[in-house]
Image (cartoon, rainbow, N blue to C red; front, top):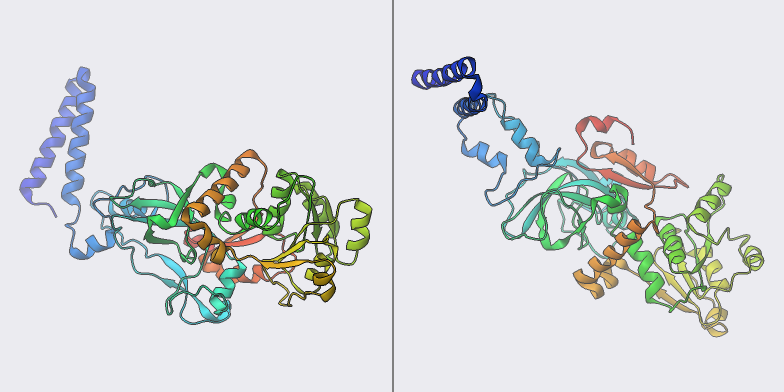
Length: 435
């Protein structure tokens, strides 16, 4: 409530403005200014006095530059606290998928509200997460099988994703509100709607590459690029063979190899839509797409030279199939084991063909060897490929956090042909919407 003197003062201000509008048309702009000032006074007078509790909820640190981007948490808070005297609505707490102990994701994960965002420190940034993929390494982390393990209880999974900068600390100069960023360090916990992080652990990416390209930038394309460059000195015209060709890494291998002038032999599983799969991979630049059963005959008919490099993400018989077609002195690089079957190195392959068997771990050895600068440089190269049209992002199906169980069901579907991601900052009503 306003005191009587304050109410009288404001009524007088509005009366003066009205008089000026009616009798001084030639001072039209001055009248508009008086109206604005009077309205500002009214809004200030009718707003509730901030208590310590309201100050904590607002979470609007003084040294920060709040974003003006629509939909950002700080903008939503500002909108809720305005309204010409209406009571300020409390901001929604961030939400996240959290696990307290290792286990299968459907059993171990819970959707929880997190504490309200704390104020950024000088070197920190506040982020709103737009899209966060679910990768095999994420599932293994929740299961407790991945070498990089979070601190339990209360861990938020997620190694990859794209977020919008909402606010920055006073010492952050290379990032600004509205920028898109991706993690430079693993295990940042991207399956959340918002959070406060060290600015040094995030890398800016341009918006013009699109949401799907940005969200999937950190793991799959750098894996493909590094495997094509770090194990064998390949020259244009050389051949690379791989299984798991329909995976996001496999599709990136096809496209990056094409840009380098390399040929690719791509193994896929028998499936009902095999013809469509072959056509799709060839449109990306694949030279040969075939199955284990037809590999030997189809490779001979293609006229392609025997591969120098083989890439394996499946294991078992699929790994053996790639090994058998490598030329003498070739190298098989294993970066995954989706079949849960071991890689068997035959005596003949090692003795008579001198095949080398290597492993690649992006978030471990490669990341440590590259350091933040090297990881950022690799991602910048991938961004350049997107901008040049040499690389297309994978198809991505997204689910709001409230539909996370549906997301994991989609992840388990055979031959799904797309990545699965969470849209952590999607509005509540989208939880019942489409995936």
